[in-house]
Amino acid sequence: MKAMVYRGPYKIRVEDKPMPKIEHPNDAIIKVTTAAICGSDLHLYHGLMPDTRIGHTFGHEFIGVVEEVGPSVQNLKRGDRVMVPFNIYCGSCYFCARGLYSNCHNVNPNATAVGGIYGYSHTTGGYDGGQAEFVRVPFADVGPTIIPDWMDSEDAVLLTDALATGYFGAQLGSIAEGDTVIVFGAGPVGLYAAKSSWLMGAGRVIVIDHLEYRLEKARTFAHAETFNFAEYDDIIVEMKRTTDFLGADVVIDAVGAEADGNFIQQVTGTKLKLQGGSPIALNWAIDSARKGGTVSVVGAYGPIFSAVKFGDALNKGLTLRMNQTPVKRQWPRLFEHIQNGYLKPNDIVTHRIPLEDIAEGYHMFSAKLDNCIKTLIIANPS
Ligand SMILES: NC(=O)c1ccc[n+]([C@@H]2O[C@H](COP(=O)([O-])OP(=O)(O)OC[C@H]3O[C@@H](n4cnc5c(N)ncnc54)[C@H](O)[C@@H]3O)[C@@H](O)[C@H]2O)c1
Ligand SMILES: [Zn+2]
Ligand SMILES: [Zn+2]
Image 1 (cartoon, rainbow, N blue to C red):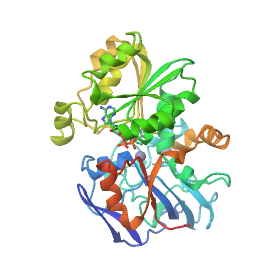
Image 2: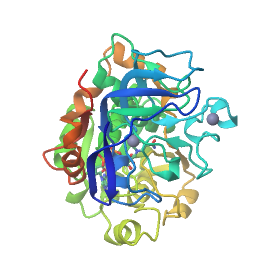
Image 3: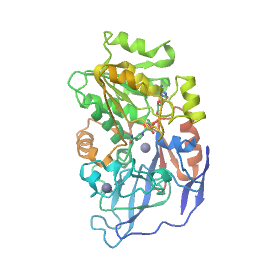
Image 4: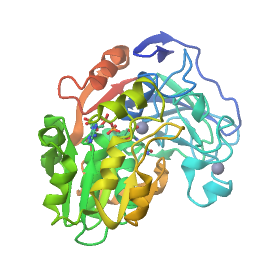
């Protein structure tokens, strides 16, 4: 089968790989129809994620058709159209029992903090991902769900990560009615976080980025006020000014480790790798929250320490909340919002490309060319 393969930083290509096999009775093999490239894939592509091995296939956002099931699988059968959350999880350990699917204790022998993620290096278990014609899905009775008939398949693929993560970001903010919410980052996750903030009762939603075409999307898709941080000497002063010098009730970091905006943090975080990424967006989030406010972090950071302004967070009495998204926990409410028309997830899709062209897709997304926001990969036309 054809699959995207990692060959080193900034080097990927499509190669022939052996078909994945059922390795455990509760596995399924899924024929991937559509996959997506996530902002998290860029951290792998840029060589920032520890233990990303040559030959690994990325891809943790995908949907497809069940090709084969192991002998113990009860909920799926060959031919079912399924959406697969990016988390691999057992569904029964201490953490899964508490809804912490992204922290499952039974799926990742290489780390205790994070659970399993498809196509996300050996740090998250070494499972091959879905930017391929076929993928092995462990615990097939736990994660995958049959795509409802009414759901657009492009919306289904976006539910497997980006949309669920944006919604989770807003949820971690514990938004109260009328709250002012600032979202750092106008990528797919930030756009969905901004949109979701309204659904949770926000009174004002502000999105910050430096890419004008993405801020335009934040205005039209998420109906947010926007600020381009490159146009201000100090974006924090501007945020204070626009919130009566109080700061925002809730701030969401939807940027993560590869944030622009501070040269020293960028060099030490992403070039020299002396910290787990540049924490500048997180520090801006801490600075622009009001005292007693909440900072929600869904932007991804590496395993080691980062120069985060922890003392300021303490002295302001902030609540900091964060995690990799437990995707399936977000689905019931998101399904409702999509079905009754409040959300049209695929409004942010800018590119649809065949699997053979995925290297160009990565380059375009990484360099933010051609007004790229979200790229879908067509692996097997359905
Ligand atoms: N927690 C999770 O489960 C989870 C899931 C999906 C993605 N993520 C993470 O969320 C982040 C965003 O993902 P995405 O797909 O939207 O990525 P993306 O790369 O498309 O978007 C990031 C955006 O942040 C902007 N940006 C850079 N520096 C900034 C700064 N200092 N202030 C404000 N904006 C800044 C960039 O211009 C870009 O538009 C990534 O770190 C990704 O790894 C986490
Ligand atoms: Zn992702
Ligand atoms: Zn578990």
